[in-house]
Image (cartoon, rainbow, N blue to C red; front, side):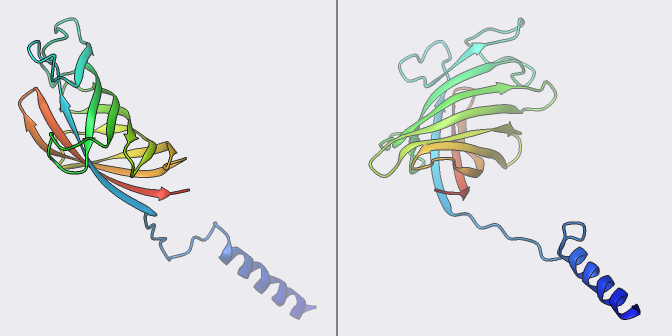
Length: 186
């Protein structure tokens, strides 16, 4: 009878050691199934550049206007964009698609924004879209936003996009390097 109890206790201990109540010490390393790097170029309308502008302020706080970004770290400005995406950092390179979406400057104290946008591809190499959302603490050298889905070649994609401000010219132009690592690929 005592031997049966010992065997039962050992069996239960074995089962518990395999359960989530006692996590394994081995950390799981996630490797991306696809990695892509693109650049997108944002030229915000400033009242004088309507032919070249790819972004415009569509919402602004009461103390500001829709032509010039607001004081206080641009807090309250809502910008809509339709920016070219290129394979290199040259604004004049042939675009392979468009970055389309919004960014909202969402803090008075710190220069930061919230992004929601899609990369819509129109090249022979890529068809479909990749969708992104997340906070963008602009003063950090690199920032991660979530890849929350996609269509076409990127159907149901999931992953991380690391953003890095590659260049900026005052309040009018900036270029982002977007390093996309997908962890769910179909």
